[in-house]
Length: 250
Ligand SMILES: CC(C)(COP(=O)(O)OP(=O)(O)OC[C@H]1O[C@@H](n2cnc3c(N)ncnc32)[C@H](O)[C@@H]1OP(=O)(O)O)[C@@H](O)C(=O)NCCC(=O)NCCS
Image (tube, rainbow, N blue to C red; front, side):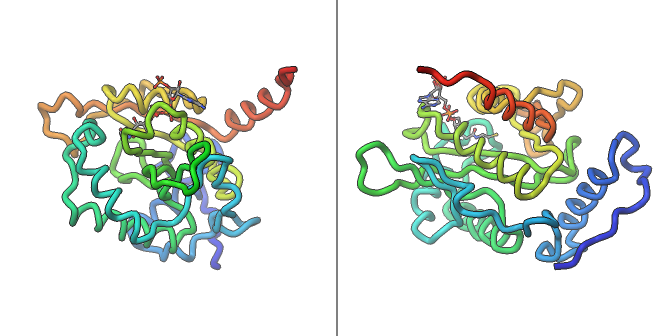
């Protein structure tokens, strides 16, 4: 794996506080522009960039690479207007399969991405595909880009169980502990209150100055306005500390 030298201060990032953060953004830019083979990126010099499966599992859910068995339920999910209410359009079967192909490639190249999610209900004999949660690099042209984001999409029968928040929390840990990211953002439309509630439950804070109109929506779309929630590594670490110091219930 090739490691890259930190570059001198880049005038494109006048507000960056540390060379580390600036270099991390440069890696994202390189990966996105196709100028660097993603497999070469040294995301985590200490640990390598593959995330241990144990970090991506809890008692009732697991994040994992995609399989062919996921194609059918994923297509049904992304063809559901309720699930895709805050997106520009539902996906056709072809688009849904192409999405899985793209994401599978990214996960095998980088070691991380938006993982398929299995849910093991209490008393159930086998886990069920519930949707996805994980880490992603959004379009670098977005005003908040380049950055790493956490994202989720679940089939409606798995809403209201706390699964997105739990899987989001595992993804944040993977991003901060294994990939050593300095910050993780989350982006959604202003109207997507369910998704915004997950961001808040994860301790992310809305950054009003980052609000923007998403170019994927038509100019007259009520969904066009998007908000950005941010979670710097330091705040995530502090929240772990607070949780550890909280007295255990008797
Ligand atoms: C966004 C989305 C993932 C949120 O799912 P969700 O189930 O509402 O979110 P959570 O997993 O955090 O679950 C929280 C709910 O579970 C409840 N809950 C039940 N058991 C729980 C448990 N053990 N732990 C935590 N919460 C629990 C909470 O009280 C909360 O209920 P509420 O919705 O009545 O307030 C889902 O609505 C979705 O997939 N939407 C479509 C796709 C989409 O818009 N994706 C986001 C694009 S940015």
